[in-house]
Amino acid sequence: MEKRRIFVAGSTGSVGRTVVRLAEEGGDDVIAHRRPKGGSEAPPNAAVFELGDKAALGEALEGVTTVIQLIGTMRKRFAAGDTYETSDIGTTRQLVEAARASAVDHFILLSSVGAGRPMGAYLKAKAEAERLVRDSGIVYTIFRPSFFDGEGHKAPPGAALVTNWLRLERYRPIAVETLAAAILACGRERAPLNRVLEGGPLWDWVEQSSR
Image 1 (spheres, helix red, strand yellow):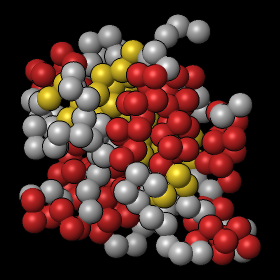
Image 2 (cartoon, one colour):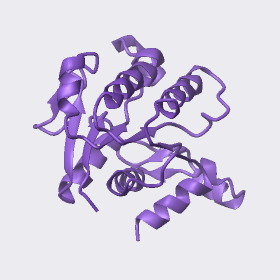
Image 3 (cartoon, one colour):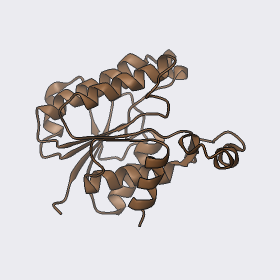
Image 4 (cartoon, rainbow, N blue to C red):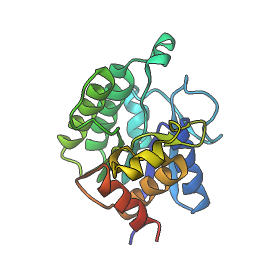
């Protein structure tokens, strides 16, 4: 299979940092993007520019086959100027438009469990980002994990036990390393396509891609 060239948007977050690290360890052709205000957690050779800079984004996507969109925000970051509209929806729109103008043939979006039936501003923003990706005309894969565990995240006490006991797979916590590996495998293999991975299908892919 032809080697993929992967653009990671949101490389300063816990999942993004882990995706980039795993990609570099595996010898993948990866471009780690960070916004100028995104902090110093990204690799030293990261592509640094605002996604609203169409020329810079277009240049960065030259030769890219896969976009992995991991940018999102939380209410506690609103004081720094982030909003759901700008971070979750706006950056997805910018990436989709640039991807459509380039040779990108696979768009991977990190969303959230519950985005299929959104309640509240956070999930409604995730749902709108998903809609932009689904309507883009580009082959896509959408990940809808529940609670993150590790890399600065901590799932609620007993969450794994309760979700396993009640067989609520869609709410089962997932280790950041496990999620990042599954996302990267999706980018490497360009599969599964035009799928939303939540609950059982997400865990099926985690198992399949780790073999």
